[in-house]
Image (tube, rainbow, N blue to C red; front, side):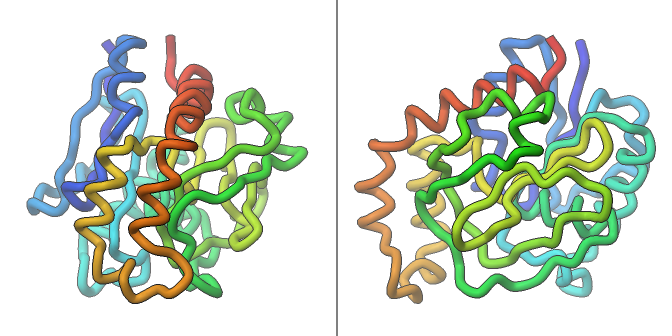
Length: 232
């Protein structure tokens, strides 16, 4: 059985719908729980790929979260080996940083359900191109990234034009969350309530009310991506 290494930054942000999708395809996984002090492995050779999940920290907070430096080293190794990599939210920002792109604060936080448009390059991408040209996805972030030099720009939103990219053949960085379930979203609302309550343009109530309208279609679109990304 193939096995992916999964870097987890906080307990409430896990694989979500990725985990059963991997299991159905005979793909295993090993969590590295960075929030519990587990060290980042120094190599990736024994794994079939790498997944870097989201988290509340920023890529430039390496003094506060030293494991971010070790992740940067591992991501660079994984890219050099051309193994499959999926970075989600913070994970996508970490891949961008590791490949020389700038990560910075956005104009405002993008939290809740927003429309995403797939670019021309996205429609032509082997793994991304099966998604609809426009879809509604879940977002929870304040930072953004530049598209790395030489990478393919795959998708964007109105507030954050850089939402997805591919580096090389197999490394994908996503700013948005394909992996969420209704339960995960509710957990985030509780975990990050102080962040959410400080904003006057989005509320927990709106997110809770919007979720039943969009969550099933998000799961379908996520499965389309997983089917292309993970080995059969």
